[in-house]
Length: 413
Image (cartoon, rainbow, N blue to C red; front, side):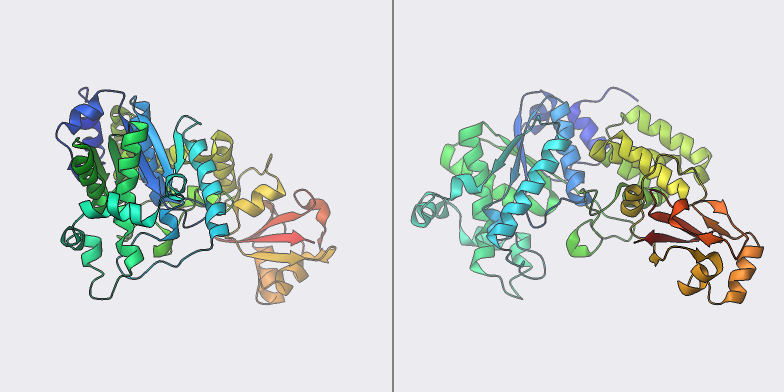
């Protein structure tokens, strides 16, 4: 492919929806722009929806720009208006805990090279009357009502706190413009109204131009955005969504979405992405594009070792090598597999029936005789074989497989 400018590559990857500020292409093409991306600490982990934006911010950093990553200790106390209903207010202790967790995640993703800020630091001592005088007088209520997110809530009702959210986020941009040299904001497209409020404040108060662009919201194959409000969150915390779970999800990405995801979520060059897609088309059943996607995301989030374990656990479910996997690896990685508690020194026949793996002794014998039962990927046919923790991984865990598709995790107390 021909050499592209930074902005052209963002367009090619489908990362630009709305833009603000004359000359934004040059701001992106020439290294050195300070920009910010923000999120509110509504949970103790970010999820894949956040990651789609964070990857773009990291991409800008690798292009030579300077990222400021904001975690909203102030805005999180109110909550960004949702399209349907008011957000639940969380306690201050929970909020602060979430901030600590999220900042660690962000710092790891950016290799400690991004400036991390909390907007509570500049709001905690800001007098309410001064805020109204300094900021509120510059933003017309009719202007605020015209914003899409506000307009959609007028029929069902919106609290004054939520209504004020865009003033607070708008001031964030102004504050960082004045104190940190931040001239550009980068967010998901659902933040456009808040972004333009900040640009307007900078223009009216400072008489200067600011810049922004939004990214389209990334949707799954069912048309839903990734996020906890949609009930399909894939958490960046590997203890909430294991690398294996993430690997399985990405491995099963629809072919219709995998090109989009490779462009959005990976740092592969355009030529490398085209090459992967061409090789994928030649042998689609091998799912090369999906495997490449999973490798890129998991390695960036959790490292090469976690990716290797995710692949190994996936293969272990289908008879692969268990060497090197610990009981903890299996319990964390396979937490979605049904778990049963095992008593020591139990016959294999009793184990299968007592734990509902087989519905009767007759079915258990049929499964054993047809070579359809395996323990830790070893086939067993003797119904009288005594199962003890001596054959368990770390003396604790046994992967029990019935046929080709049913797996169970047996755990010794």
